[in-house]
Every structure is written in structure tokens, then in C-alpha cells.
Length: 96
Image 1 (cartoon, rainbow, N blue to C red):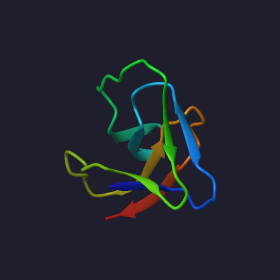
Image 2 (cartoon, rainbow, N blue to C red):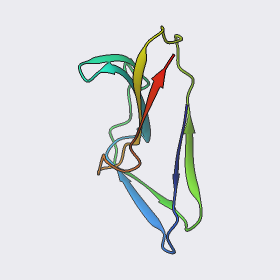
Image 3 (cartoon, rainbow, N blue to C red):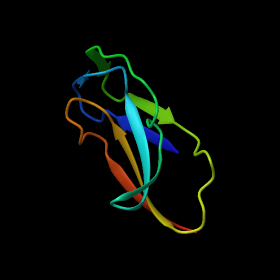
């Protein structure tokens, strides 16, 4: 899975983070049934951080799903974990 945030504006985009975590991926079977989460069980530094994305540049994060998914329909969420959690959130429906 790959999550890309691009700055298509003419101004720098300043991202504020509340921990060392920069992104996350979550795979759901239903809203209440999380099948896989990249960040589950990981520890992140508890420090404020900031990244600046220049105009016409981007951030790219990639992860591999482990273990492989069983057959079924899933929602895949990828998000940049800024102070404003809705930034760069996307959902994909996967039907195998």
C-alpha cells in the first residue's frame, strides 16, 4: 500500500505532528472489525514535530500488509497523522 500527499498549491504546506508517527494504514472488514493496523503494537516518540512540504512536492509512505488478507471485502484507510487527523485520508474498497 502506498499513501502519497502532494502539495499542489503555490505555498509551502506545514504539517504539525503530536508524536513521532507520520502516517497510518488500517484495514477494516466492518467499522467495528479491524483486520490489520500498521501502527498497532508500535511505540512512537512523544514529541511535537513539524514537516514542510514545498510546492509541487510530496510525501510518500509505503507498507506491506502482513499477514496476507483472507478473501472478503475490506476498507483500506491511509492517513497522514497530523494534528488535524483528516488530512490525506482515503478509503478503498477491496473485493477479492
